[in-house]
Each structure stands twice: as C-alpha cells, then as structure tokens.
Image (cartoon, rainbow, N blue to C red; front, side, top):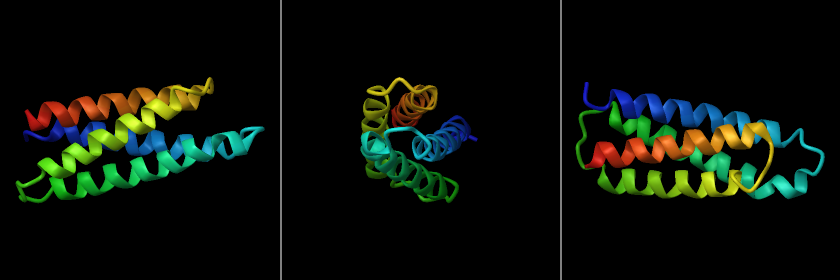
Length: 106
C-alpha cells in the first residue's frame, strides 16, 4: 500500500495535536496557549480529513495534501514557540506529517 507511511504519519499527527490541545488547557497561562490550541484542533481535523480521503480510491488529492502540509507547518511553527514537552512532541509530529505528505505527492 503506497500510502501506508502517510496514513501512519497522519494518525500520529492527529494524536499529538489532540493531546497538545488538551494539555494546553491545563497550562497555567491558558490565554497564552489559545493560538496553539486553535491550530492543534484545525491540524487534527485537516489530517483526519486527509486520512479519510486517502483510504478511498480517489486520486485527485494534491490540493488536499498541499493544504495539509500548510496547516501542519503552521501548527509546528506555533508549537515551537512554547517550551512545553507536549508542544515539542506535537511540532515534531507535524513536521513529520508535512514531510510524509510531500513525499507522497512527489
């Protein structure tokens, strides 16, 4: 299955984004984490949608992959601004997912 690596990366990204958003809610200064939470939620949703489309036999996915790459990179950029371990882990998963999308599209 050509997209197995990408599906794994998408699933990992979804899990890390959901965990990061939830963990951000427990941080002392939640107001400082609003943009991180928002991007975590959007990224998880975009990755989930990408995952769902990829398991079909539909082939015109380039636009979706491009958008997924954009959102994953935005989420990683935001998470990298924070020192929390859950943010660092999320940024890493987002970067890996963006790379997997690029490799799949190539």
